[in-house]
Image (tube, rainbow, N blue to C red; front, side, top):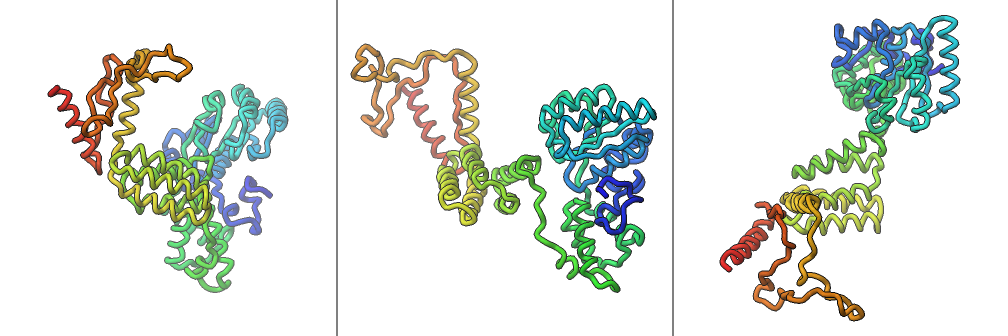
Length: 434
């Protein structure tokens, strides 16, 4: 038996999550933003007119269950497969069988592809024609952003349905239903604190909740309710919902960087811990900190870049797990440091200015004077050496002639940048006085 069998065919030896799989739209929990009664998608599913769709959402939110319900309402032959194990030859065989079925019985074929993001571009191209001409109606499920994971031609021929993580209340409904169901479920009592713990640990994933509940029920005596001790005994370290090639990876690093930029060390440490527990490459984390030190702190605190680079070297030379201490030190320092994006804004402005026109030649007095074997090169003549003057500064032209959008660099009012601003303004006043 497989995960895709009709619920009536699933025996009690199957996992609780499989036994409790909803059979109708009425039993389905969650995704009210697209499946509320009366909503257009609800009607299209009921009438079997949905067509090819891609179900995009996190694990445990009901993608596979919804695919089964869509197929049931379409009154079509259902072909469930994992994209991991389906090759081009398999696609062609499925398409030929679908044609034969349509010709002999008039019945359509719905191809369910789980983890469709694993399909290569060649496999997607092989499937495209069959989806386009209606030989196969595809219902695909993915945890990855379809815009990145799927080729545009296939994506344009499908409706993308975005599924959200289940809320705690929705997970609670699913767990309570399993507890109350004496036929397919557990048919047991569960103490309120134990139920709350199951819901909390699930993190919006119904499968995790039901697996944990089933394990706790197996540890509890046959007579009596499931209590918190049973749930805690059944609990193992949760596998983080984190794929280093997928959305969770990008979402977590985004939250991490934004927390450091937003000067919240506790939030930054939270996301750092999540990445560490998920097995993220520490070099990736360290590189992002080095970038952030210049982009978001810059000259407001030049030590930020020094400390970030030091943490990066520790990661490379000392290794794991000790390096996480240095990462934590860098993260907390950077989060608490004064913030300035003036350096990032400055290089953006300068780059935009340079791209507007063909840059003029470098002023002669700033050019290289050339090597001894190239005496004919002109350059350096008229250059004034700043260190020969008080304050190690002397007024001279550095920018080539041109209508430049100045200034590029405008120090902020954070950290030591006010001192830099004051120094720059003093020199500008000197220019004006001269």
